[in-house]
Image (tube, rainbow, N blue to C red):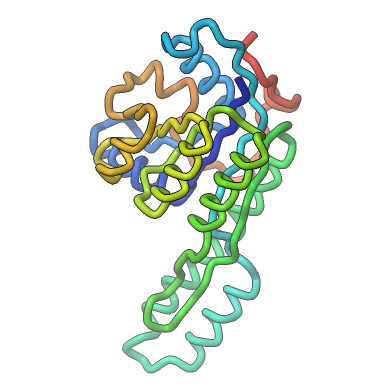
Length: 237
């Protein structure tokens, strides 16, 4: 059975916060290991124990910090009244740091086989600051499109966002399986019941979490660790 993985990176921020509150550390998804973890985890489920599971591709969806966004914030700061300047300074700092951090991250993951970033430019308004737009729509479109194209038999979705519920229903109506990996407290109840299977991070021990996440440690110059210079395999060895 063919497996595709869809990750909503922004939704995972809520999961990170919950895991931190539970004393599990500041965990980030390790995309190098994610497909191996998913195939191994599903293979142990009785539903799929006699199936040959094949990872097709992982898509990761996120809002992108851009030079255009940074320029818009700088323009707003320059023209702002004094009482708003601090707000715009904070937004500018966040955007500049986010831009540099993302640039290093995108470079790292560009070396991974069968992995694709799906990015939408982050938006800015003087009232709302920086915000994400269109990312969940892109995920929903890709989910349904690939189901129609018969690219996968099983969609593994790392998100509990209620905005995806109609696309989940559409995919199921096409005879595909939809499995949601998320934290129960960060998942809409209707998404839990609509999914063919709901996998709750809250029930994972640290050993299981370590198979697809790592605890974040700040580093000055992001690089790919030596043991990750080669592209990841697509099935557990």
